[in-house]
Image 1 (cartoon, rainbow, N blue to C red):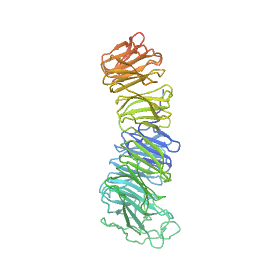
Image 2 (image 1 turned 180 degrees about the horizontal axis):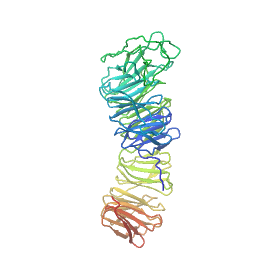
Image 3 (image 1 turned 90 degrees about the vertical axis):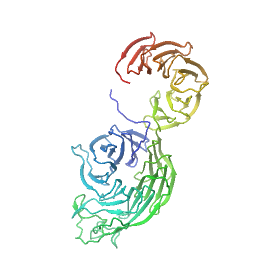
Image 4 (image 1 turned 180 degrees about the vertical axis):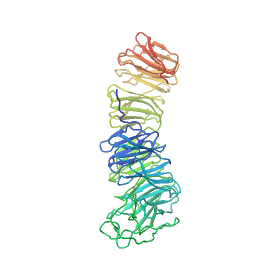
Length: 593
């Protein structure tokens, strides 16, 4: 039978950056896989491709057709998103800290250690050498942490761990490459850098550099006097002048003006030719502003050019939304108790997406109406148990974080989280009516949850505290049974009254497996005392049959017709018993633990 992987439930986000493609598709890494969430349809699909290790960086092409992922081993996958297939693979030689497509989709900027590399973006076809390295800039003195392109794919601004921002003209001009402009003055690593554009000419006229210590510097560019729209066809007969070479210790960058021949209208793109439109003018520091979140560090940021908005996230779980260039705080909220690891705008700028890797949180927020589009959180610690509902539409998970979460299988979303348990959740069981879920915990309680009203309507306890590790209910739903870790007993309650009916004692080790027969009221239990026992719960006769083994019994299960009982043991064997005659039917060897 051919099975197709669809959704990865339990962890919507586990680190790395998230991106929004085509305005509504939220693409986020989950370990070594990629989840794509449609924020309008409220559906999630996990791509069938997987990386060799955890994915840390994602970039999406401007049209949303291609995505590029880089994992912890610096291995890159170039994926066709609609077809969900990997087209190309490449391994970078240096640690990748940032990656971004150019606005025209033809190039990919990669921050590989101290190097800024420009790669030609592969196309739809599978090729032997899909990636082509076009340019490499080695001007930075430490790791590059952030990258941004201008609208025409001619300029790059990068932020580095060496406390500076740099402006690169990526075309090769006559006489070689020009030295980058330097944005100086920060006292911590520059983790965000962005171009701002003039709305009339759509040309770069400002820039923002954001440091880890919570300071944002606003830079302004002044072009040739008398024509603000330099470089726009039909508005000037002269090409902008060549940029100068600034001193490395100046905060105000100027340029030497050079006269050249008249502009002939030809534009070069990563070839030897004319200089770009950011020439003949100068950059100057306009203002310094502080987000005032010390001692917290700035850990995530993004900028929307159309709305001139900056969003920042901090290590204390606070995020802020600011209107630039006046630095007006529009929102300042705490959405997590751990650091935010990603913050990003959608294309229209009306939605903000935040991720917290440590808590497994992924949030999409509409900032104008202050409402959530998406609010998901995975388990904080290891998942111990899971259970499908009888109709296979729901999946419940229990974990060491004391929580029970219920997920919709088709959408991949968690729609309810129960937090009443005070210790690890160890077992789950859906009742036959599909609207009731049972959970057992090391806190000494078994709880029944109403999946219609989202409440705990029954709590089953014992006279003295016990640690429960297994759970079962009979077919009629009248009796609830739970096995213990410490006293090696099985407790039996009435579902209607929550009254303790019986205590089954015979095992000499933790009871880690319980299951009722599908055809009668016989309960099977497995234990680390190397036995499987059958109990007639309603008659109260105690153990009616015992099946001995040579090793601890880990799990048990009935065949759907109830005519066979299978159990796995610590030595890697599976034993098949006839529960009616009490005979061993066969044993499968060498399965492994």
